[in-house]
Image 1 (cartoon, chains in turn cyan, orange):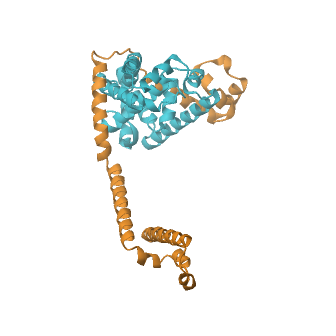
Image 2 (image 1 turned 90 degrees about the vertical axis):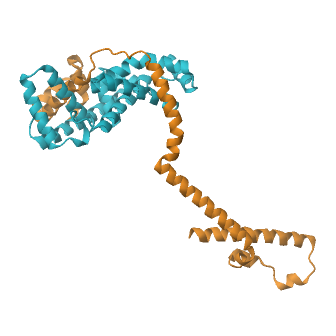
Image 3 (image 1 turned 135 degrees about the horizontal axis):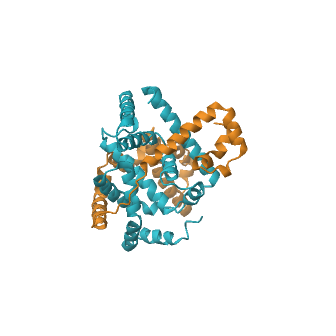
Length: 197
Length: 166
């Protein structure tokens, strides 16, 4: 799919020429999507507003580098997810388990949370799952992470991903397979460090 | 994970049995490693769905204005933050120091041009012999000497720069 000749491409070119009306149109078109992605990761309305502002600010400053190889949505999705992970890294929320500070103690806590949520409310289980999956996704490269999230979280098919990213379907399948394998290995390392959870 | 499973993985996880080849099921029954890895991938695909927002969120009023405020602030700050950034500042300092040293070297070389000429081997070979000097100089010879003089000065600067780098 050619992303250079679409209506969206014309809009991007106007923003690249610093047309503020066009930028406003992009904000209005994608703000709900951006909020939804951020809220899915962080589950916090206040943080979502702040990060969404930062995402659109980044879009404004870096749209000159947008090369039309992928769809605008794919590009915005990547910026949004990266911004969420930057936020998590900076904030270091102790309640939320993520990335390199995941110790054996954290894994033990996760084990206890899992056990506790067996009888507890379903929302706790969901939170524990979300924390775990964020932690595992942090072990992947930004590209692998985005692709896997577009597939499993956003529910896009391989064919759609091919159109969105400009890569052929086989490449998408290979990349998804490798990303899934890395995720399995990250989970296995986690299990080895903490016993079975 | 082996090829029959790998090739049909996305179709299987998507839940499209009609698109999955017979090899897939046959291999899955025979290979415990693949079956185990596939189960883990299935569990993780399900786990990833915990990141689905599930609700439609609209920003509060004035969201666009707040973005533009942020853009303005960051646009203003970015020029100064670039200058204040340690890595950029170091490079700028090194570049300034290099320019100062080169200019200083050039001026010193220009003032002390004659002694510097003596150390340039190319210049030594281009000095005319005493036999040439005995004859009265023609216009062409005078022009040649001017050219040689300029060449000496250039050589002196180059020699000085080269010795500076060493």
